Image (cartoon, rainbow, N blue to C red; front, top):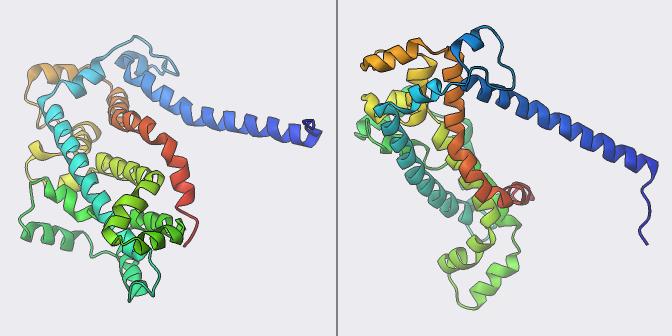
Length: 295
């Protein structure tokens, strides 16, 4: 027989659901306002009439952002960067986290290796040395300048190795007894069991590569090679119109409000992540919690 909830339990449930509902509204309402601003006319925005619903519905902001050839090219660069960068990130992250997840008896100087990677996460050489390295390696103005400097995200390595350390040791030991080596154990046992953590780290890598704009500005001499985030930062955020030569685009820009263009930028930047997240959502929460079992 199911015992009825006590009054204190009922009060807690009501308070909990109310708090979560208010928190959800606080998170969603600003996004609804931005979406409404992106679809409203300049006059309505300047008059302060836009709240949670578009006023004088208009696609001009999205038309300005999406119809430029440079926008399509930069989108292609970002897609290439995400595909190449995430693949490299995940490969190096797994190959680094697996040996570091072993005990010191299995990997000599394991603690020293681990602190070496942690040190690189806390301290860096700075912007100028990083730029000089990329330049001396002749990577400027290439996709590799956007991918290789951040090829091994140490934070993701720490998440992954903690997850690996949380797996039962008996699984690896039984595989070794059956004659499997480290490669077979990693690819056939560890990785299939680590899909929640891998999905979580993959989502982090996708968001990082898609939203990162600063490297594009400093490593790309030709704006044609800008990723989407760098292109939008240059054209939209700073409103640099020096690269706009089409008279019709200049006319369209003169009819827009700066807030509507910024709002359109935010939503266009959110779309790819919103498309990817549903496929990884079922792994996300379990990956975040299971990866934090051990230090």
